[in-house]
Length: 309
Ligand code: ZN
Image: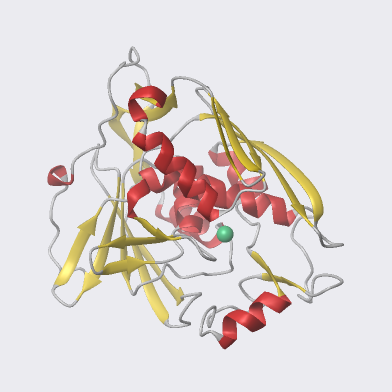
């Protein structure tokens, strides 16, 4: 199977969840072996950054990447869409310090990427595969992973709330299943948390247009839910996005219990720290290469002028 990028540059704008400010997102095609590269606007022009487990600097409410003085919040729903559509190479340019929240799901990003169209490239895909099973547990929550050429997620949540309770969802992730069963699931929060966050100057861009909000009894959004089990499906979406902070698609059969951004990132950091034990790069269509994981170097990424419009 060959690598994939998008056919043409496409953009959108929206507001950031944390600060409520307008931000612009531009998605651009990238050459083979580029991987996912963030192009962030700063005072001295555009700087390029490759995501990584270590680049995650904050996991409260959303996953935030930090590169020196530059930060980019709420990357997970966009990364989930890119991973869900099996795009290997992409420039993600952002003017602002958050990815726009859009409707709180991956649906808008799926729409944008599909509108851009896809281009098959010549080199084979490179997947991070597991060499051995791993059980990663913290405080009664866990991520268990088994080696597989596919990405499957079997997720369970357990919230003490009449509308949520115990929910389970299983998906074998591919562009069709991700788009149909996962992409539209919105982020959710509880009314009591919203009040606390607002008092502390957070979630200023949050509204019923980009989140499912629950009071003590049920969902207060007038339109209700998009799926009866939208909550667990969104957790699956977050998990797929949080695994993809490596910028290279990981495969495996994952069983996840009550995880969140913090545990997802602790897991990814742990296996990268012990990558010689746990990971290998599998080149699709070729004999698997039993080598240490080497993520593509940023020096291979062409520097694009800041004159992007
Ligand atoms: Zn989310």
